[in-house]
Length: 420
Figure 1 (cartoon, rainbow, N blue to C red):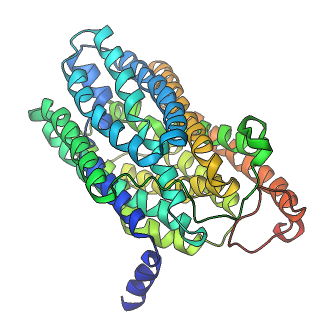
Figure 2 (spheres, rainbow, N blue to C red; figure 1 turned 90 degrees about the horizontal axis):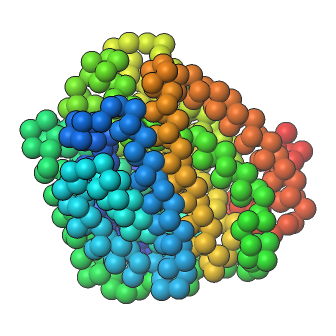
Protein backbone atom coordinates (compact mmCIF):
# COMPACT_ATOMS: atom_id res chain seq x y z
CA UNK A 1 0.00 0.00 0.00
CA UNK A 2 2.84 2.42 0.82
CA UNK A 3 4.42 1.76 -2.58
CA UNK A 4 1.11 2.45 -4.29
CA UNK A 5 0.73 5.71 -2.38
CA UNK A 6 4.23 6.73 -3.43
CA UNK A 7 3.28 6.18 -7.07
CA UNK A 8 0.19 8.33 -6.58
CA UNK A 9 2.20 11.15 -5.02
CA UNK A 10 4.76 10.99 -7.80
CA UNK A 11 2.01 11.12 -10.44
CA UNK A 12 0.59 14.34 -8.99
CA UNK A 13 3.84 16.13 -8.11
CA UNK A 14 5.12 19.08 -10.12
CA UNK A 15 1.85 20.16 -11.74
CA UNK A 16 1.49 23.97 -11.96
CA UNK A 17 -1.05 25.55 -9.54
CA UNK A 18 -3.01 27.07 -12.44
CA UNK A 19 -3.57 23.59 -13.88
CA UNK A 20 -5.01 22.50 -10.53
CA UNK A 21 -7.33 25.52 -10.63
CA UNK A 22 -8.59 24.67 -14.09
CA UNK A 23 -9.14 21.06 -13.03
CA UNK A 24 -11.09 22.18 -9.94
CA UNK A 25 -13.34 24.30 -12.15
CA UNK A 26 -13.89 21.38 -14.51
CA UNK A 27 -14.79 19.18 -11.54
CA UNK A 28 -17.47 21.60 -10.37
CA UNK A 29 -18.83 21.92 -13.90
CA UNK A 30 -18.94 18.18 -14.55
CA UNK A 31 -20.44 17.37 -11.16
CA UNK A 32 -23.60 18.91 -12.55
CA UNK A 33 -23.50 16.98 -15.82
CA UNK A 34 -26.86 15.27 -15.73
CA UNK A 35 -28.68 16.12 -18.94
CA UNK A 36 -26.44 14.61 -21.63
CA UNK A 37 -26.37 10.99 -20.35
CA UNK A 38 -30.18 10.95 -20.31
CA UNK A 39 -30.91 13.27 -23.22
CA UNK A 40 -31.96 10.47 -25.59
CA UNK A 41 -34.34 9.10 -22.94
CA UNK A 42 -35.70 12.59 -22.26
CA UNK A 43 -36.46 13.14 -25.94
CA UNK A 44 -38.09 9.72 -26.15
CA UNK A 45 -40.14 9.96 -22.97
CA UNK A 46 -41.17 13.62 -22.83
CA UNK A 47 -41.56 14.44 -26.51
CA UNK A 48 -43.10 11.05 -27.36
CA UNK A 49 -40.42 10.25 -29.93
CA UNK A 50 -39.33 6.80 -31.02
CA UNK A 51 -35.95 5.50 -29.95
CA UNK A 52 -34.64 5.91 -33.49
CA UNK A 53 -35.85 9.51 -33.86
CA UNK A 54 -34.55 10.43 -30.39
CA UNK A 55 -31.11 9.11 -31.30
CA UNK A 56 -31.16 10.91 -34.64
CA UNK A 57 -32.05 14.21 -32.99
CA UNK A 58 -28.85 14.04 -30.95
CA UNK A 59 -27.00 14.75 -34.18
CA UNK A 60 -28.31 18.30 -33.82
CA UNK A 61 -26.25 18.60 -30.67
CA UNK A 62 -23.24 17.42 -32.64
CA UNK A 63 -23.73 20.05 -35.35
CA UNK A 64 -23.75 22.78 -32.75
CA UNK A 65 -20.70 21.25 -31.12
CA UNK A 66 -18.75 21.43 -34.40
CA UNK A 67 -19.51 25.13 -34.70
CA UNK A 68 -18.74 25.75 -31.04
CA UNK A 69 -15.41 23.91 -31.17
CA UNK A 70 -14.16 25.82 -34.21
CA UNK A 71 -15.46 29.08 -32.78
CA UNK A 72 -13.83 28.33 -29.44
CA UNK A 73 -10.47 27.71 -31.12
CA UNK A 74 -10.61 31.05 -32.93
CA UNK A 75 -11.83 33.01 -29.91
CA UNK A 76 -9.16 31.44 -27.73
CA UNK A 77 -6.43 32.47 -30.17
CA UNK A 78 -7.71 36.05 -30.06
CA UNK A 79 -8.86 36.62 -26.47
CA UNK A 80 -7.13 33.87 -24.49
CA UNK A 81 -8.60 30.66 -23.07
CA UNK A 82 -9.76 31.82 -19.62
CA UNK A 83 -12.06 34.64 -20.83
CA UNK A 84 -13.58 32.25 -23.38
CA UNK A 85 -14.22 29.68 -20.65
CA UNK A 86 -15.83 32.18 -18.28
CA UNK A 87 -18.15 33.65 -20.90
CA UNK A 88 -18.99 30.26 -22.40
CA UNK A 89 -19.90 28.70 -19.05
CA UNK A 90 -22.00 31.71 -18.05
CA UNK A 91 -24.01 31.73 -21.27
CA UNK A 92 -24.54 27.97 -21.20
CA UNK A 93 -26.51 27.97 -17.94
CA UNK A 94 -29.80 29.50 -19.20
CA UNK A 95 -29.66 27.34 -22.32
CA UNK A 96 -30.27 24.19 -20.25
CA UNK A 97 -33.51 25.77 -19.07
CA UNK A 98 -34.39 26.64 -22.64
CA UNK A 99 -34.00 22.96 -23.55
CA UNK A 100 -36.14 21.90 -20.57
CA UNK A 101 -38.95 24.21 -21.61
CA UNK A 102 -38.92 23.03 -25.24
CA UNK A 103 -42.31 21.46 -25.94
CA UNK A 104 -42.10 20.92 -29.68
CA UNK A 105 -39.67 19.12 -31.95
CA UNK A 106 -38.48 22.38 -33.54
CA UNK A 107 -37.88 24.01 -30.15
CA UNK A 108 -35.88 21.00 -28.98
CA UNK A 109 -33.72 21.00 -32.12
CA UNK A 110 -32.95 24.73 -31.85
CA UNK A 111 -32.28 24.50 -28.12
CA UNK A 112 -29.84 21.60 -28.50
CA UNK A 113 -27.99 23.34 -31.33
CA UNK A 114 -27.56 26.63 -29.45
CA UNK A 115 -26.66 24.86 -26.20
CA UNK A 116 -23.88 22.83 -27.78
CA UNK A 117 -22.63 25.72 -29.92
CA UNK A 118 -22.10 27.98 -26.90
CA UNK A 119 -21.14 25.27 -24.43
CA UNK A 120 -18.47 23.67 -26.58
CA UNK A 121 -16.46 26.85 -26.99
CA UNK A 122 -15.18 25.92 -23.51
CA UNK A 123 -13.55 22.65 -24.58
CA UNK A 124 -10.70 23.92 -26.83
CA UNK A 125 -10.20 26.85 -24.44
CA UNK A 126 -9.72 24.53 -21.44
CA UNK A 127 -7.33 22.27 -23.35
CA UNK A 128 -5.31 25.22 -24.63
CA UNK A 129 -5.01 26.74 -21.16
CA UNK A 130 -3.89 23.40 -19.73
CA UNK A 131 -1.26 22.89 -22.45
CA UNK A 132 0.07 26.43 -22.28
CA UNK A 133 0.33 26.47 -18.50
CA UNK A 134 2.11 23.10 -18.32
CA UNK A 135 5.79 22.27 -18.57
CA UNK A 136 6.87 19.79 -21.29
CA UNK A 137 7.34 16.93 -18.85
CA UNK A 138 4.04 17.54 -17.06
CA UNK A 139 1.72 18.09 -20.02
CA UNK A 140 0.36 14.54 -20.32
CA UNK A 141 -0.23 14.42 -16.56
CA UNK A 142 -1.91 17.83 -16.68
CA UNK A 143 -4.39 16.58 -19.26
CA UNK A 144 -4.90 13.44 -17.19
CA UNK A 145 -5.60 15.63 -14.15
CA UNK A 146 -8.21 17.53 -16.16
CA UNK A 147 -9.84 14.25 -17.13
CA UNK A 148 -9.64 13.00 -13.54
CA UNK A 149 -11.51 16.09 -12.38
CA UNK A 150 -14.05 15.76 -15.18
CA UNK A 151 -14.65 12.09 -14.52
CA UNK A 152 -14.74 12.52 -10.76
CA UNK A 153 -17.55 14.98 -11.37
CA UNK A 154 -19.12 12.64 -13.90
CA UNK A 155 -19.09 9.82 -11.33
CA UNK A 156 -21.48 11.96 -9.28
CA UNK A 157 -23.64 13.64 -11.89
CA UNK A 158 -25.05 10.73 -13.93
CA UNK A 159 -25.49 8.51 -10.86
CA UNK A 160 -27.62 11.15 -9.12
CA UNK A 161 -29.38 11.98 -12.39
CA UNK A 162 -30.47 8.35 -12.80
CA UNK A 163 -32.47 8.58 -9.57
CA UNK A 164 -33.75 12.11 -10.20
CA UNK A 165 -34.88 11.25 -13.72
CA UNK A 166 -37.39 8.71 -12.44
CA UNK A 167 -38.90 11.14 -9.92
CA UNK A 168 -38.25 14.79 -10.80
CA UNK A 169 -36.59 14.83 -14.23
CA UNK A 170 -36.65 18.65 -14.47
CA UNK A 171 -34.13 18.90 -11.62
CA UNK A 172 -31.33 17.50 -13.80
CA UNK A 173 -31.65 20.60 -16.01
CA UNK A 174 -31.63 23.00 -13.04
CA UNK A 175 -28.55 21.39 -11.48
CA UNK A 176 -26.68 21.42 -14.81
CA UNK A 177 -27.38 25.15 -15.17
CA UNK A 178 -26.26 25.96 -11.61
CA UNK A 179 -23.01 24.01 -12.05
CA UNK A 180 -22.12 26.16 -15.07
CA UNK A 181 -22.61 29.39 -13.10
CA UNK A 182 -20.57 28.09 -10.17
CA UNK A 183 -17.73 26.96 -12.45
CA UNK A 184 -17.59 30.34 -14.21
CA UNK A 185 -17.57 32.22 -10.91
CA UNK A 186 -14.80 30.03 -9.48
CA UNK A 187 -12.64 30.41 -12.58
CA UNK A 188 -12.99 34.19 -12.62
CA UNK A 189 -12.27 34.52 -8.88
CA UNK A 190 -9.43 32.00 -8.54
CA UNK A 191 -7.54 32.54 -11.79
CA UNK A 192 -8.66 36.04 -12.69
CA UNK A 193 -8.08 36.82 -16.34
CA UNK A 194 -4.77 35.00 -16.68
CA UNK A 195 -5.04 33.42 -20.08
CA UNK A 196 -1.94 31.27 -20.21
CA UNK A 197 -1.12 32.40 -23.73
CA UNK A 198 2.60 32.07 -23.24
CA UNK A 199 3.53 28.42 -23.04
CA UNK A 200 6.42 27.19 -20.98
CA UNK A 201 7.07 24.70 -23.78
CA UNK A 202 9.32 26.20 -26.43
CA UNK A 203 10.49 22.95 -28.01
CA UNK A 204 8.48 23.51 -31.19
CA UNK A 205 9.54 26.97 -32.33
CA UNK A 206 8.57 26.81 -36.00
CA UNK A 207 4.95 26.52 -37.19
CA UNK A 208 4.02 23.06 -38.48
CA UNK A 209 3.28 23.08 -42.23
CA UNK A 210 3.54 26.86 -42.27
CA UNK A 211 0.65 27.09 -39.80
CA UNK A 212 -1.77 25.21 -42.08
CA UNK A 213 -3.26 22.32 -40.11
CA UNK A 214 -5.12 21.10 -43.21
CA UNK A 215 -1.76 20.14 -44.76
CA UNK A 216 -0.67 18.13 -41.74
CA UNK A 217 -1.62 14.70 -43.11
CA UNK A 218 -0.43 12.79 -40.02
CA UNK A 219 -2.64 14.90 -37.80
CA UNK A 220 -5.61 14.53 -40.15
CA UNK A 221 -5.19 10.76 -40.55
CA UNK A 222 -5.03 10.20 -36.81
CA UNK A 223 -7.96 12.54 -36.27
CA UNK A 224 -10.10 10.75 -38.87
CA UNK A 225 -9.43 7.33 -37.39
CA UNK A 226 -10.02 8.56 -33.86
CA UNK A 227 -13.30 10.16 -34.96
CA UNK A 228 -14.49 6.81 -36.32
CA UNK A 229 -13.76 5.22 -32.96
CA UNK A 230 -15.65 8.04 -31.26
CA UNK A 231 -18.72 7.10 -33.31
CA UNK A 232 -18.64 3.90 -31.27
CA UNK A 233 -17.75 5.58 -27.98
CA UNK A 234 -20.53 8.16 -28.28
CA UNK A 235 -23.18 5.50 -28.46
CA UNK A 236 -22.96 5.91 -24.68
CA UNK A 237 -25.21 8.95 -25.03
CA UNK A 238 -27.08 7.67 -28.10
CA UNK A 239 -28.57 4.17 -28.31
CA UNK A 240 -26.53 2.63 -25.47
CA UNK A 241 -28.93 3.66 -22.64
CA UNK A 242 -31.91 2.63 -24.77
CA UNK A 243 -30.22 -0.68 -25.64
CA UNK A 244 -29.56 -1.47 -21.98
CA UNK A 245 -33.13 -0.69 -20.96
CA UNK A 246 -34.95 -2.36 -23.84
CA UNK A 247 -32.69 -5.33 -24.61
CA UNK A 248 -31.39 -6.14 -21.12
CA UNK A 249 -34.17 -4.73 -18.90
CA UNK A 250 -31.73 -2.56 -16.93
CA UNK A 251 -33.39 0.30 -15.03
CA UNK A 252 -32.35 3.93 -15.46
CA UNK A 253 -30.86 4.08 -11.95
CA UNK A 254 -28.67 1.07 -12.73
CA UNK A 255 -27.64 2.58 -16.07
CA UNK A 256 -26.40 5.59 -14.12
CA UNK A 257 -24.35 3.30 -11.91
CA UNK A 258 -22.81 1.63 -14.99
CA UNK A 259 -21.69 5.06 -16.15
CA UNK A 260 -20.18 5.55 -12.71
CA UNK A 261 -17.99 2.45 -13.14
CA UNK A 262 -16.36 4.27 -16.03
CA UNK A 263 -15.71 7.44 -14.10
CA UNK A 264 -14.59 5.74 -10.87
CA UNK A 265 -11.98 3.69 -12.75
CA UNK A 266 -10.67 6.82 -14.47
CA UNK A 267 -10.45 8.69 -11.18
CA UNK A 268 -8.67 5.80 -9.47
CA UNK A 269 -6.18 4.73 -12.13
CA UNK A 270 -5.77 7.14 -15.05
CA UNK A 271 -3.14 9.39 -13.44
CA UNK A 272 -1.06 6.35 -12.49
CA UNK A 273 -1.41 4.91 -15.98
CA UNK A 274 -0.49 8.14 -17.77
CA UNK A 275 2.45 8.75 -15.42
CA UNK A 276 3.75 5.26 -16.21
CA UNK A 277 3.27 5.75 -19.97
CA UNK A 278 4.62 9.31 -20.10
CA UNK A 279 7.86 8.34 -21.83
CA UNK A 280 6.25 5.90 -24.25
CA UNK A 281 5.54 6.70 -27.88
CA UNK A 282 2.10 8.26 -28.10
CA UNK A 283 0.50 6.79 -31.22
CA UNK A 284 0.85 3.04 -30.45
CA UNK A 285 -0.71 3.59 -27.02
CA UNK A 286 -3.51 5.71 -28.48
CA UNK A 287 -4.14 2.99 -31.06
CA UNK A 288 -4.33 0.29 -28.38
CA UNK A 289 -6.85 2.41 -26.52
CA UNK A 290 -9.00 2.82 -29.63
CA UNK A 291 -9.03 -0.95 -30.16
CA UNK A 292 -10.15 -1.53 -26.56
CA UNK A 293 -12.96 1.03 -26.89
CA UNK A 294 -14.33 -0.80 -29.91
CA UNK A 295 -13.85 -4.19 -28.25
CA UNK A 296 -15.68 -3.14 -25.09
CA UNK A 297 -18.77 -2.14 -27.04
CA UNK A 298 -18.38 -4.85 -29.68
CA UNK A 299 -18.64 -7.82 -27.31
CA UNK A 300 -21.99 -6.75 -25.83
CA UNK A 301 -24.10 -9.02 -28.08
CA UNK A 302 -22.18 -12.06 -26.84
CA UNK A 303 -23.21 -11.99 -23.17
CA UNK A 304 -26.04 -11.30 -20.76
CA UNK A 305 -26.49 -10.00 -17.27
CA UNK A 306 -25.46 -6.95 -15.30
CA UNK A 307 -22.05 -8.42 -14.43
CA UNK A 308 -21.19 -8.96 -18.08
CA UNK A 309 -22.27 -5.43 -18.99
CA UNK A 310 -20.16 -4.04 -16.16
CA UNK A 311 -17.15 -5.96 -17.53
CA UNK A 312 -17.65 -4.38 -20.95
CA UNK A 313 -17.59 -0.95 -19.30
CA UNK A 314 -14.23 -1.82 -17.75
CA UNK A 315 -12.82 -2.75 -21.20
CA UNK A 316 -13.86 0.42 -23.00
CA UNK A 317 -12.91 2.54 -19.99
CA UNK A 318 -9.35 1.21 -20.19
CA UNK A 319 -9.36 2.14 -23.87
CA UNK A 320 -10.58 5.62 -23.02
CA UNK A 321 -7.80 6.08 -20.44
CA UNK A 322 -5.14 5.01 -22.92
CA UNK A 323 -6.33 7.10 -25.85
CA UNK A 324 -8.00 10.37 -24.89
CA UNK A 325 -5.45 12.19 -22.68
CA UNK A 326 -2.54 11.06 -24.83
CA UNK A 327 -4.22 12.17 -28.05
CA UNK A 328 -4.57 15.69 -26.66
CA UNK A 329 -0.96 15.55 -25.48
CA UNK A 330 0.25 14.30 -28.88
CA UNK A 331 -1.53 17.16 -30.64
CA UNK A 332 -0.23 19.79 -28.20
CA UNK A 333 3.35 18.53 -28.50
CA UNK A 334 3.33 18.63 -32.30
CA UNK A 335 2.88 22.38 -32.60
CA UNK A 336 4.06 25.61 -30.93
CA UNK A 337 1.76 27.48 -28.55
CA UNK A 338 0.59 29.87 -31.26
CA UNK A 339 -0.98 26.99 -33.19
CA UNK A 340 -2.38 25.00 -30.29
CA UNK A 341 -5.80 26.58 -30.03
CA UNK A 342 -6.42 26.04 -33.75
CA UNK A 343 -5.26 22.41 -33.69
CA UNK A 344 -7.20 21.68 -30.51
CA UNK A 345 -10.24 23.47 -31.91
CA UNK A 346 -10.11 21.27 -35.01
CA UNK A 347 -9.66 18.15 -32.87
CA UNK A 348 -12.69 19.00 -30.74
CA UNK A 349 -14.64 19.80 -33.91
CA UNK A 350 -13.73 16.35 -35.23
CA UNK A 351 -15.00 14.87 -31.97
CA UNK A 352 -18.17 16.87 -32.52
CA UNK A 353 -18.50 15.43 -36.02
CA UNK A 354 -18.69 12.08 -34.31
CA UNK A 355 -21.53 13.54 -32.26
CA UNK A 356 -23.38 14.10 -35.53
CA UNK A 357 -22.58 10.74 -37.07
CA UNK A 358 -22.97 8.57 -33.95
CA UNK A 359 -26.71 9.13 -33.41
CA UNK A 360 -27.43 8.84 -37.14
CA UNK A 361 -25.54 5.57 -37.49
CA UNK A 362 -26.59 4.21 -34.10
CA UNK A 363 -30.26 5.06 -34.55
CA UNK A 364 -30.46 3.67 -38.08
CA UNK A 365 -28.66 0.45 -37.15
CA UNK A 366 -30.72 0.00 -33.99
CA UNK A 367 -33.88 0.11 -36.11
CA UNK A 368 -32.53 -2.73 -38.26
CA UNK A 369 -30.97 -4.82 -35.48
CA UNK A 370 -30.26 -3.68 -31.88
CA UNK A 371 -26.88 -5.48 -32.04
CA UNK A 372 -25.78 -4.18 -35.46
CA UNK A 373 -23.91 -1.16 -34.04
CA UNK A 374 -21.83 -3.39 -31.81
CA UNK A 375 -20.82 -5.62 -34.72
CA UNK A 376 -19.69 -2.47 -36.56
CA UNK A 377 -17.64 -1.56 -33.49
CA UNK A 378 -15.55 -4.72 -33.91
CA UNK A 379 -14.88 -3.84 -37.56
CA UNK A 380 -13.80 -0.29 -36.65
CA UNK A 381 -11.54 -1.70 -33.95
CA UNK A 382 -9.69 -3.79 -36.52
CA UNK A 383 -9.38 -0.75 -38.79
CA UNK A 384 -7.98 1.33 -35.90
CA UNK A 385 -5.37 -1.33 -35.16
CA UNK A 386 -4.04 -1.25 -38.72
CA UNK A 387 -4.23 2.52 -39.14
CA UNK A 388 -2.39 3.45 -35.95
CA UNK A 389 0.33 0.88 -36.57
CA UNK A 390 0.87 2.25 -40.10
CA UNK A 391 0.89 5.92 -39.07
CA UNK A 392 3.15 5.34 -36.07
CA UNK A 393 5.71 3.60 -38.28
CA UNK A 394 5.73 6.52 -40.72
CA UNK A 395 5.94 9.06 -37.90
CA UNK A 396 8.94 7.19 -36.46
CA UNK A 397 10.72 7.48 -39.77
CA UNK A 398 9.91 11.20 -39.94
CA UNK A 399 11.17 11.70 -36.37
CA UNK A 400 14.41 9.89 -37.12
CA UNK A 401 14.86 12.23 -40.11
CA UNK A 402 14.51 15.27 -37.85
CA UNK A 403 11.30 16.65 -39.38
CA UNK A 404 9.50 19.25 -37.21
CA UNK A 405 6.31 18.48 -35.34
CA UNK A 406 6.94 14.75 -35.11
CA UNK A 407 9.13 14.23 -32.06
CA UNK A 408 7.91 13.65 -28.52
CA UNK A 409 9.44 16.20 -26.15
CA UNK A 410 11.02 14.46 -23.19
CA UNK A 411 10.69 11.00 -24.71
CA UNK A 412 13.57 8.84 -25.92
CA UNK A 413 14.18 8.92 -29.67
CA UNK A 414 13.14 5.82 -31.56
CA UNK A 415 13.87 5.02 -35.14
CA UNK A 416 11.67 2.90 -37.33
CA UNK A 417 14.14 0.02 -36.99
CA UNK A 418 14.03 0.22 -33.19
CA UNK A 419 10.24 0.32 -33.24
CA UNK A 420 10.16 -2.77 -35.37
